Structure formats: structure tokens, C-alpha cells
Image 1 (cartoon, one colour):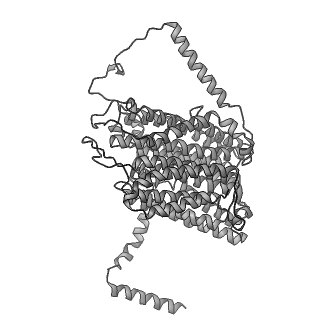
Image 2 (cartoon, rainbow, N blue to C red; image 1 turned 135 degrees about the vertical axis):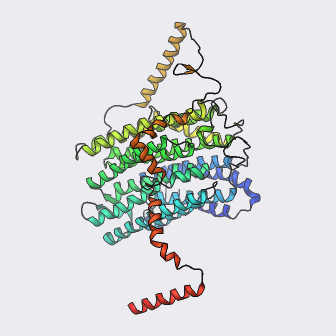
Length: 610
């Protein structure tokens, strides 16, 4: 079957939906999930049985890694198209006590949303299988434009967030162009299969690798090029956030980095350590930022950044098991982070807010959403036997395997950061689940009865089940000869998740059995905190769990600097650009004769120089 078929279907659908009249929105909403599942089925078929027209063969790279990414893109395209069909259905939240009043949690122009959605999907498919770097560059840049257009459909502040994302990703694309230019200058070819450059051979090759790494960091959201993700998550429609920063951008950004390490370059230990250090720093700094957030969207966005650190750390090890861990974690992260965003979107759609202070008491009203978000929270925290644990375990082994090949100091610090980051991740998701589902209902918010459609629930269940299945059956999958052709490696130590799962289930059943035959008397007492009974007017807020962290002197200064955007590379460069352009802006008076005078002066200078 022709590997270009899903690309053609997606791009044609995107163009057609773009010109649909508003009266056909219902058709668009129903047709999009069908197109999504059709593309996913085709991606599954093409994973095992693909064909490329002979006249295009040199432009496309159809190895196992590209087909794996292709399959992942098809899967998330299907899941988000299904959720989008429910999310775009018009509904209005009337909640007089909520901070977000009478806000429509739907998308105003359904046709444009799905048009941009499928244009993004088709472009992502193309990037995944592009062998020619120029072809990759064109569709990589086009993805930045569709990201901008999709973010713009959000609520207040979306335009500024869209502009910020376009500038950061667009600027990183300039580095990608520079890196491709250096490769052309050195090799006179743009085909990935014909390139293999040792970074230790010359400084120019190292510069080109760093250019590719910058583009990858910006797309995936690794520090310090991550600052477009929190405002995007805070303002863009939830399906957009789950589709791009949470899934597709992670797949493509990490795919490019892995392709560089596996195929395009032979990475030196110095550049490998460079990747590992940035990965470890991203894990720690982003998770600390997540812990103090009061907005559910922003908390998830900083964890979307933090988890990229594990992927970069694994790939940075440069050994097969670490790279395999980074790639597996990339796919796992897209699953559980999309699940978390989709669950939060349903909560937001039913309550009118994502403010954690204003939520609580939803466990009984939204049990399926509690199940999906709790499963995804445990998975992202690395709790066995879920999928997040297995991929992190592979990353840890990759870091340990670097000890013998270089100075162990940097890998040891990176390993400690990764382990510590997992503990902090679990802590912050305890805060999230408690605030939304287990805490007392806030008096600031009058929660309405949930009325979610099946289109909102099914995608969450699919992703939650995937978290469980890819955890329990990860070992047979990862050692399968088909997948080991990507990166042949041997695991260190013994971890059999299917056996562990069986033992956990047996332990739980034994516990219930012992409880049943022991006739233990259960004493029910009133709720209390620190020995003091909880009154009806008292409420334990999940947002205050880690408030004391922000009051520690050194952390207080760091958080204060973060609030002033001193770590935001976008704000830093904007300040310097405005500083140097201030006097030039005085010349822009709006007078046409004055502009003509500038043109004449410029032409005169050029003529004198010539």
C-alpha cells in the first residue's frame, strides 16, 4: 500500500474543510473522527506493508523508526479527532460563582479547527517519513504555521500565546536551516540515508548538530526553549493542547533528535553530555514550577516540559538502551499527557474553570474521568506496572551504562535528578487529583451536573487503557525482534511487568481474603486535621500542599525571578530587540514622503558601495 495515502487524505481533507460553509459544521464534526480512524487503520497496515512510488523513493525514508513515529501520529490523530467532535459541540457554562463566567468551552469555527487539524496531521506524517532534509524543512515550518492558527482559536490571551509560539519555533527553524546548509556544504547531499558526520571531526559539524538540537528542543519543549508551552496550554482549546504540545510536537521534536543521534551524526561524548545536562535540568526546574501552579492547565504544561527532559536524557546517553528508553518515553508521555489534558478539558467543560482552588468533590460525579486521570497521573509519575515506569527504567539503565565510557560525575548527577524528578512528579499529581476530585467542593464554585458526551469519554478511556497495557506488556513488546531492529540492546537487571502485575493482583486478593475472614472491626471517626475536627466551614485545599516550598529563601528568589520572566528566552530577546529598535521606531512616522526619502537614501548608499 502507498505510504503517501494518509498524507494525501489528511491534506485534501484540511483544504476541503477550510472552504466549507458554517452550515456544514455538523457534517465536519461527524466526518472528522471517521477520517481519523481511517488514517490510523492505514498507518497500522502501512507499518507492516508499505510501498513508495519509485520516482519518489529518494525523498522518503521508510525504516522502522520512521514507521513507528508514523503509527504514533496516526493514533493520536484518531484519538484527538474523536475528542474534538465532542469538544466542538456547542455548550455554555452558566456558573455565576465561577471566575470564568458564561464562557463557551467550544470552538467558534468548527470547520477551520478541523481544517487546521488535518493540515497539521498531513504535515506531521510527511516529516516522519521524509528522507530529504529540504522536504522535512518545508513541512516542519508549515507545522509552526498551523500551530499558530490552532492556538488562535482559544480564549482571551490566545493571540499573544500564538505569536509567542510562532516566534520561538520560527526562530529555531532558522537554526535548522543553518544546520541543513552546513550539511549541504560538507556533503553536497540532503538525503538522510547518505549522511554520517562525526561531530568530533570538526567544529562546523558540531555547530550543525547543535542547530538541529535547538530546533528539536523548541518543538518538543525542552528548556530553555519551552516558554511557549505554558501560555499555549493556558489559552488554547484543550484538543489543541493535547494534540500539539502534548503529543505531535513531542513525537516530531524527539524523533528529529533521535534521527540526528542514530543516523545523521556520530555524536561525541562532549555533545552527549551536553544533551544529558539539559535533559536533567529540564526535569528538575520544570517539575518545581509545576508544583506551585494553581491552574490545572499550567500544572500539566510544566509537566509536559519536565517529561521532555527524560527523553533528551535517554537519547543523550548515546547508547542503544538509553535511546530506546527516550523513544519509548516519548510515546508513553504522549499517551498519558494527552489523557490528562483531555480529562481536564472535560472537567473544565462541566465546571467552567480549571482553577484548582475552585474545584473539588468531583469523584462521585465524574468517576470515569477520575479513573482515567488517576491512571495517567500514576503513569507519568513512574509507578509500576504502568507504562511510564518501564520507559523511565530504560532511561535509568542508559544513564548507568555511560558510567564506564566517561567521567561518571555528570551521569551520576543526571541519574539523581531523574529519580528525584519522578518523586516530585508524584507529589504534584497528588495535589492535582486531590484538588479536582477528593477535596471538599469549593464555596467559590457552584459545580454543575456533568453532561459529557461519549466523544469526550471514549478517548480518555482508550488512552488510560493504553497506559496500563503498554506497562504490563512492555517487556514482550520491547524485546520483540521487530522492534529490536530499531535499536538492538540488552536490558540490565530483571523487570518483568506482567509477572509483577500478577503478584500485585494476588496480593490485593489475599488482602481482601484476610480482611474477610479476620472479622476486623472498622471504626468510623469524623474527619480531622492534626487532631482537630474539621468544621463545615473548613476546607483542605490541594493547592496549598507545597506552598512552603515557595517560601524557602532560595526557592522564593527563583520563583520570583520566574514570575518576572527572567528565565523566559522570548522575553529576554524581546527586551533587547525593543531596546535597540527604539530609535529606529522613531523614524516610522506614517508619512509616505518620509518613507520614500528613506528608500532614496538607501539606494544612494547601495550605489556608492557598488
